[in-house]
Length: 313
Image (cartoon, rainbow, N blue to C red; front, side, top):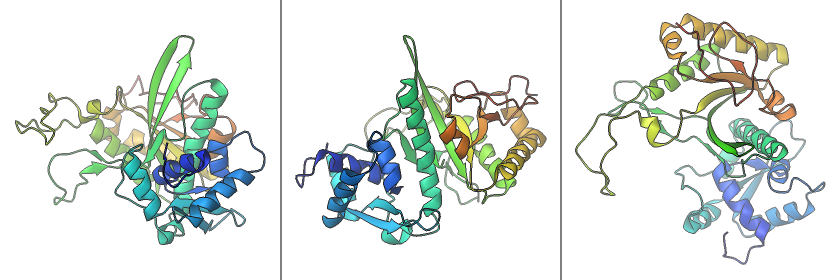
């Protein structure tokens, strides 16, 4: 907990959340931190306290929010959070201009997706909390720099961690989340899928040079194995268009994946699925709402079961 400025407990909770998730509306913050309250009177009071202390700022949501405020951590608030050492420091900081920019809805959609998993965890008795997803974590997917024109890093919209509990077992599930608000072409979505395939197969070049911490380099395995117990499932979350249009985008991505020889080779090892934000929010990830990207069978399954295509060529 942050123990400076004499902040109340809820205000202490709000700052790391705003820092890590960049931008959240009042209703999203209520759903995340005070889900059992009907009217967020106390929450608004704490947000206004943070704003008066210049630790948080707010902007009006650009569309669809009916004047709802979206909140972010100011530079002073970010300094406070980083000094407390409770979350991973990030180079990116939200500003008043970026909070009101065209990226606003995309950021809010990422957090709406994370909230859908948190809500599902509450209902099912699983574990997924306010800080269990992070936006835009960089993952190197090739050696060297990017002067050749190839991307050197994979940057998912978010990485989410979820612990699925069943009887006496606990399964750690990680997800690479890609949010599409019907603004990208299906070809661009397929490009993202290709990047995940490259990352899954990326083995850093062994080096004899030790890191600045003195630790020896990893033993030549895949890069992802240093970060995850299993390769995260890739989940495309579609929103921003009518259901029929999103269904067409799902079919288009599946068709592009089937037509690409490199992706067909990756299909047997790369778990990738497609759903909609509306389905995540209304049914939850443990209902059969996720369509597999690969394979002839397009029968939806849930977020625990979808995996690589067993019959891929």
